Length: 433
Image (cartoon, rainbow, N blue to C red; front, side):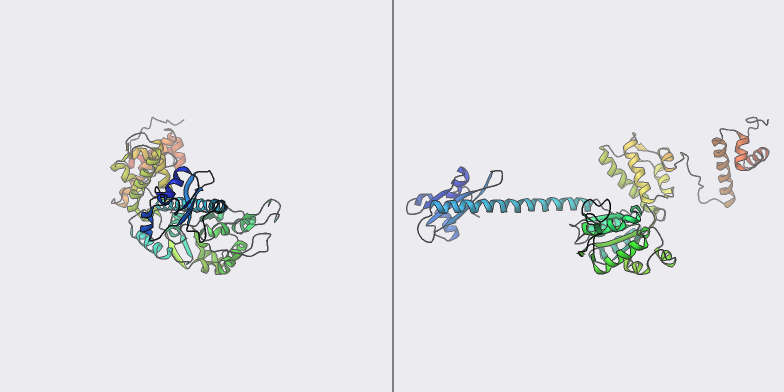
């Protein structure tokens, strides 16, 4: 590497002015150390500045040893013109490199945020299969209840593949009206229908080279399924109102919470599309089937949301941990994530205890009825009945007649039942009228 502060190059960089030098007249201006390092002999040279669009000097353009004679003013003007074009090309290359670098940083950041949290055997197996199929073009069908994280799995497949630098486009098929499904997926030409005021690319076009995630695929109409099957088989589509075939290299990953095999039997889902999508099946277990992952997920989400909220992470007490572990999580991981988000932003203490979770985990503001395992059936039944009667009386504001009616009992029978269960009975609380 030659230093840029020496010789004629250094002069042009310092002054911003072009220089023409002939060794016969200005031997002292030529840096012979550079010649020795490059194993070359400079007889004449012409050096002009490289300026960007803003006029900033960022380099020089130099030619040496004209074949005949000296460099002239015309040579200098031609080189300045050439340098202006070279400067634009170099700036564009630098801009492109910066854009690519920024894009790579964004992709890396997005990929780092996509994690399958858990140590249960089901999640470990899911991670293993995801890694194996990610960098293939195999069709993947993701099955699981709502809230189990089907889109996270689809994103994991995308970011582990060679397509990671290309778009990941997610489409909720349940949210697309049947009349607009074809336009949403394949795009439309201007004037194709009443509201088509301009040409619009569809999701397949936007996802070209990347991954198209079709969530709730079971909600797609039979007509939409037929068009989707054709694109999957031919990798070509036509915009609505158009005639030009457009090739697509989008990888399709589909997901559903429905039993597609049953839908096929009932003629609600195309059998050929089912087999086309179902090359590799990934099934996500509901959160209640992997209780060992609940606290791992809770701590992960709580840490993440507290970092965003710029607050210290509160401690989950043993009672709170027990409460989280025992909850059935009907909303799966999404319910747990939302709970941790609310706690991160709304709780003010440095500890989260079981009572802090009671209202959030039970939408009506009461703990769900539950009994501890390890009891006899008779004891569990008695405990359940006591709790159910107590809550009914509380709900009725202590009005025993109303509580009895709601329980389907006569008032006297309710008292008798309570005494049988060993509950405190205050027959004066609601005397008969």
